[in-house]
Length: 114
Length: 107
Image 1 (cartoon, each protein chain N blue to C red):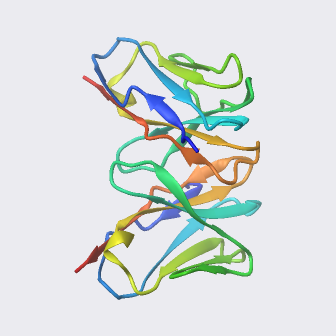
Image 2 (image 1 turned 180 degrees about the vertical axis):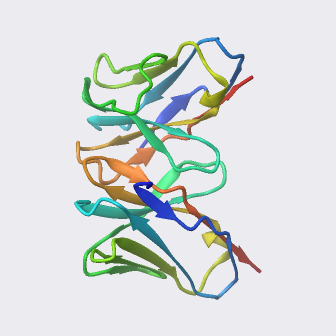
């Protein structure tokens, strides 16, 4: 079974630039999550989708971050404009159901903002 | 106060040793509890769920203490391959991750 796919794996940008990350969840998984993991910290949930609807985006900095999952399958997360403190690993995860008790994570995108 | 707190370690133990560590959570209404494992520069992977009565999976034992609001993980007969960061995860209305406890098993 194919796992969660993410791209790119690494990205280096300058502050105030824009960046987008892509995630393809495990086939059949209705729920998709985006997490931000800053070095030395645990993953922080940014947004949770159930199919193509948003379940929780309470911790998403909406002035600069946006995410969509238009067809209920793959998803993109965008940062515009980026700040230095956005440097982190962005993890995508998926689960079969909304309860998300078993989440499968992708390899992550490592973002460095200079 | 953080929702989930863990001793960051590192716990540096020899092969074959037993190592144990705890995680405390602030929301008494939390419903489910998990341990995830994260290897260096890799993604987190579910290690085990934590049940009210405590549960074991091979060399790993997890326990939950609702009264004191903590969960624990014990690793017996440590292997080099157990070296990783162990993330405590607590589910209230959403999943909250701790910052992780780093375990290093040395030969």
